[in-house]
Length: 214
Image (cartoon, one colour):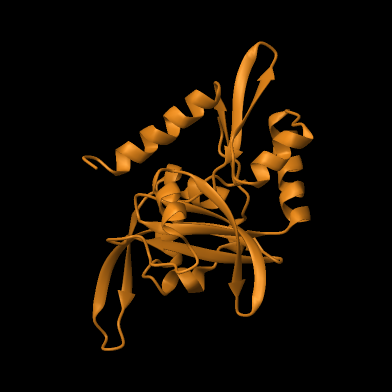
């Protein structure tokens, strides 16, 4: 399946990329698969970036990149590799364990005095938290767009479950399909051929791959 590009070349924030040692030439000379992933809004595989300290020392750091739309602007998000999950005092130990096992949580957080609802997911490979701020209409619009793109129709209860970060199962023709939130995907959703057991199996496979020997 061809990768859909959600960003134009003129929208790439070259100035922000230059701050991590990736100039325009390096962006445009990326391998096609990597560039397509980046331009689709998906989180990229690990790449090597460079950051200059205040003393002028340049450090090489592996991280992932993602382009997102935010109120009409294009933002560059970075997910650096960490030794441990960042300590977030808003998360309980139960929530942290759920995230570590590949789950998604919906949580109201206070950012700069403003209370916002967020979906939160862990990228196990980098140990970075992926946060998706949302409001009811915004998420409903995204679900409607996802239904249209994939030619599926969800019931009210299924939509409500997805809004809570849960996966749901439906039948298309004679095939079972599972749908749920996956913030690593460009649209924020993932569709798996199979029932919820297959969804869980694939989530566990992804978890095991990046936590070998855990």
